Image: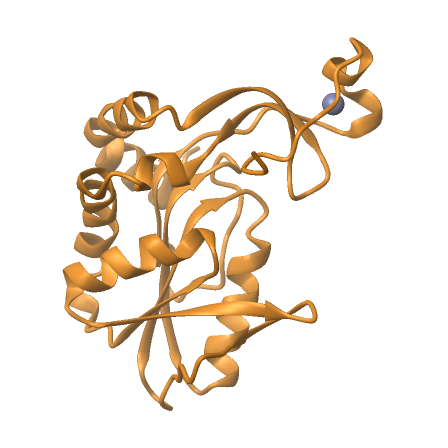
Length: 206
Ligand code: ZN
């Protein structure tokens, strides 16, 4: 049986799902090939979110889904992990009329730099472009909590986990993706593409 949030999500985004796919294919963001994912797994497809977000009109439409979802949550600041999440965070913040900040890794640890700060009690929305295992987002949530912010929810463009990634939100509806799909992935030693002699490339490296 589908959970309430799964039902809400599929009903609420079905109309938009086709639009989202159109935007992805029109901008060439749907890549086919042999890719090395951040998780270490290989895949025959990759969503290069940056390619769709290079068009401000598309960024506006996609981020509108997220901004709209959190409009009544009195968000004070939007935070995103660099680099992928920055454009999403900026556009969602613009639509909500609030600040936009981002975290960066220094010596492996996700942190606020550049004088960015979260004031204790501020209501913080976390944004990201693509989520597969959600690693970066979990780290950003930690940064929010360590700085005394109130973690209000998380919004991202593509959920590549098929909806299985769950962040520690107060209510299931405080997590939203514009598009949910299950990534086709293989472990390196079981990858049919490797077997056929090709070498995986890191998406975005070219
Ligand atoms: Zn492979």
